[in-house]
Amino acid sequence: MQCPICGSKAFRVLKSRTDESRSRKVKHLVLECEECGTVFRDSLVIEKPESHRIIISEHGSSYRDEVDLYPHEEVSTGDAITVSGKLVEITSLELKSGKRVDKATASDVKTLWAVSLEAPARVGISVDLHGEVYSRKVEVDRDFEFRVGDVMKIDEHVFKIRSIKTEDSMIRRGSVPARRIKRVYGYPVNLRFRHDLTDMIV
Picture (cartoon, rainbow, N blue to C red):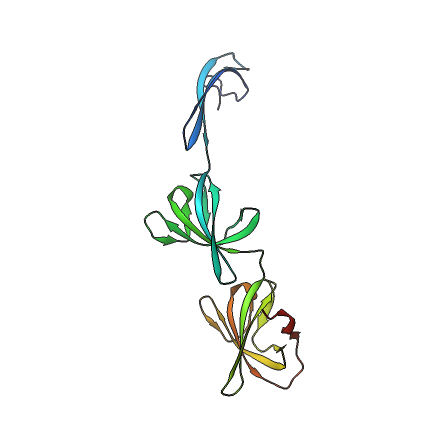
C-alpha cells in the first residue's frame, strides 16, 4: 500500500473494517499519508489456509492426515513439509481432476502423497544361495548408502551386493541412499565385510 498522490508508504490508519469469508479475510482501510496528509482508501486481502488430504507412506503402510496450505501456495514433489509435527516429503500431487502431477498450486490439489522423513528406511535384502533365496528386511538410516560391490553380513550370510532396485530403475554400479531403495540383491562370498545388518532385521 502507498499514497496515490506522493507514493509514500508511511501512513496512519483512520478506520478499519473487516469482511470475512471461508477462504479469505478482507480489511477495508481508511488511511492518512504521513508525508502529504492525503486521506485515501485501500484494502488488504488476507488468504486463509485450506485443509488438504495427505496420504503418508511409512514402512509399506499408509495413513491419512490433513495439512493446511494457502490457496496460491505452490507445492512440488520433493518438497519437505511438516504434518502434525512430523517431517514428510511430497512424492505426488493429485489434482481435483484426478490427474497426477509434480507441481501445482494448492487450490488445484485434491490429495497430496508423501513419505515420512523421520522413520528409518526399510530395505529388502535378497541373497542368492545358488537355488535358494535368503530374504530379509532391514531398517537403516534413510541416508545409509548401499554400494554395488560392497560386502555385508546378515545373520550367518556374508554377501556382495550385485545390484540395487530403486523405485524406478535397477542399479548395477555406484551407490544409492536407503530412502530410494526397494531391494538389494547379493550373492554369498568369503570375504571381510563392511557392515553387519543382522541387528537391523525387522
